[in-house]
Image 1 (cartoon, rainbow, N blue to C red):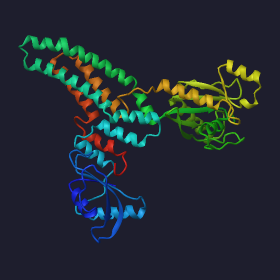
Image 2 (cartoon, rainbow, N blue to C red):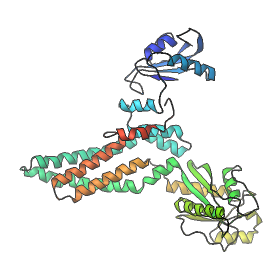
Image 3 (cartoon, rainbow, N blue to C red):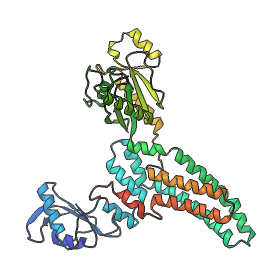
Length: 417
């Protein structure tokens, strides 16, 4: 249990018999200062500000996790003057306001807490270590230097060498920076996909084995399997960890002409989801079923491979199909391995500077500002374009204009983080 703020030393004195040596875990009895009754015995640590995570005095009580123990210590602390429960993400928000972390590190900390796969963990750790902040601050510093030159050319228009300095030095670097921002924008979905997971949609005719394959890949009965056509009418989602990447596997309604309004809606949703997916698995137990044209990347899967003889199976492979049997497991491991290899090419593990949509929005705004600056007909318009770009990049790390994004950033945190 963590406490932060100016009353920490008083709390330690009343609840844990005094303030322990800084950063040394100390065994202490915990008691209720109101009635003096014992609460628990555990470890307590004290981190004096400004060298703590929040920049304030911080105490941590390591106690036994029973509900009665936790409730008693919470009640004892809440009864002290000036104490209240923390809001969601308030400790990290205080760390940001104290300058201990920037917004990208705060977001990365939330991502690390929520990480489910190795790729998500690795991406979050890069953000916590400051790699994202370093890149944005580098871009921002270059813009500030360019602004200094152009504004100097405005203020000292009579000095010929000042104007030449802007033309020769800053304009070329601004153009290079515009290209760097464009390249970052082009790959921005990669960071989002690592955080949120890639999406794989299973399509095919009714009774072709879509739900059975979903269950086989998931290793559990996530979808109802029946011989009755049209059993799956809505989208069924399962989250998997494939080669360290988060994958959302989506089972869909069977593709066919139907009089059922509900089933037609299910098919419409399936087609719409497939159009946005990273990969579509088109399942067929007949060779003459045509896959949808809307899918960006599509793999053809020949289901019910346990019913194929060797000649039929080889013919399917030559036709570019992957034979799979959800009954015997034939081809399932190979399909998962292929999926892992596909994800490693689509979502390579190197660091990325764009992990959230707000990053992409800010970079797009910065790029637009640089376009205006590079196409401007006067020094004043160049300066304005550079100012817009600088402010946009600053919002990513929290260097400027952050009040409108703070609530969004910290709303995803849990209490006490």
